[in-house]
Length: 232
Ligand SMILES: [Zn+2]
Ligand SMILES: [Zn+2]
Ligand SMILES: [Zn+2]
Ligand SMILES: [Zn+2]
Image (cartoon, rainbow, N blue to C red; front, side, top):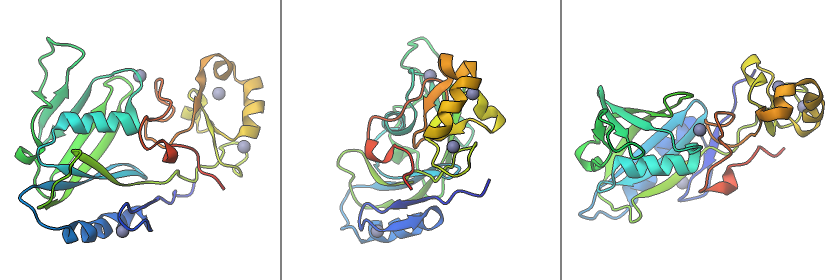
């Protein structure tokens, strides 16, 4: 399969940039914001060709970032999650009050983040979705709501694995492991007749998230306009 082209819109000027150029472009806007006594961080979050750029207030916590990631990309059934920074884990353990694993996510990011710091993140320790993130910069400006979405990849041009012509819209979560599970609306009709798993339980929506086709994931609850399928 050809490498997918990944691009997104800049929230400041609305122009489209490729994944590789987005960090540098956003840095220009961020450095032009008026200086205050507050502090914000620019974070680049990615999973392959999928990316999010966010501006995060220094007073916000890893837990708030976890909530944001769940809302836009991950939440299916309240799995555990974890950040890892320099070998130290920060776990989400809200569904188990007695869990004693790693440190808590209540830490303010101003006490943790430094420019160029790399963080690893996992959602669900069974069918895990892995994200990588990097602190791209630090700015003397506030982020009033804690976390602001600066950019996100537009739906990727994923073609149907069967006809290789039309945009894929449905996933067969069983056949996807054989490289045959991303299906356009036409090929879905044929797939239903040959795949018993698909008819029973394996049919899932293709959405704009690295968790698509995993567990019970059906899409995010924020920024839903960009959560759909690529339109030709
Ligand atoms: Zn811009
Ligand atoms: Zn789940
Ligand atoms: Zn097709
Ligand atoms: Zn199937």
